[in-house]
Amino acid sequence: MTTSYRIYPVGRIHKNGDKTWIEIEEAYREAMDGLSGFSHITVLYWFHQNDTPEKRSILKVHPRKDKANPLTGVFATHSPCRPNLIAMTHCRITGIDGSLIHIDAVDAYDQTPVIDIKAFIPMDKTTAETVRVPDWVNRPRRQDPA
Image (cartoon, rainbow, N blue to C red; front, side, top):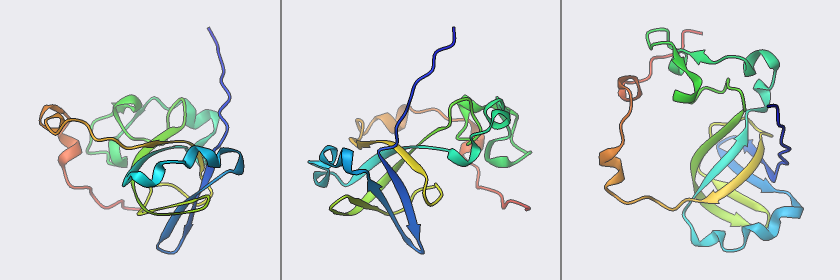
């Protein structure tokens, strides 16, 4: 069964030096009402620079591009190569000015399309004690040889 969906950007990520912000499209600005009451947001964005049939067909990668890590399915990694190029990260809001949401940082390129924003509401404090991750997640990152 093949089904497709349309996703429309609600804004774009902008980066200029050490400043990072999300500019919300005019049609979605009312959706920002109440956001100033939160310190953090979850940003969902599109890995637009990886949107090729070849990169969408990659189903296994070495996490963090480190061949010392085991070949792992992309659903168990944060790889930008995946069947649907949706990325998600948590960001601290440093300010809101009109249609701009200033954030501390995001692992995305300038002009990356934002597909949704959600106010970040932390889970119960005991959640961190019950979360399980593979060993490679806690190992220090190795420098990329390239």
